Image (cartoon, rainbow, N blue to C red; front, side):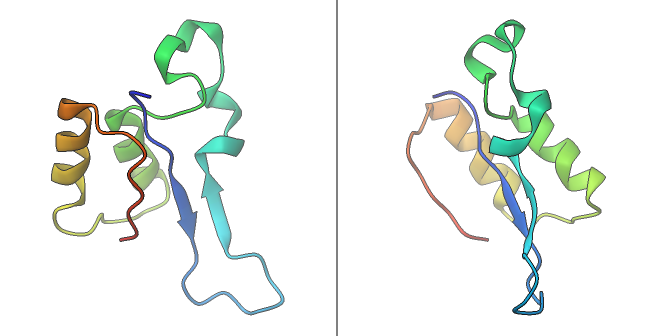
Length: 81
C-alpha cells in the first residue's frame, strides 16, 4: 500500500483504562486526496515524527526495517516492537 500504519500503546496501562495512545487510522491528518497513496497511512518520515511527538525512542533496528519495507514495497507485514 506504500504507507505505514502505526499504533502506540501504553505498556503498563491499568486494566480499566484504554492503553491506546495513538492510532494512525484515527489520525485525521492522514486523510486527504492530496496525500494520494499515503491517504490513511504514514510515510516513514511521518512515523519518525510521531515517535518524536510522543517522546519515543524507537527500538534498535526498527527504522532500518521500515526503510527496507518501504524500499521493497513490502505489504501486509505486522511487527510488534
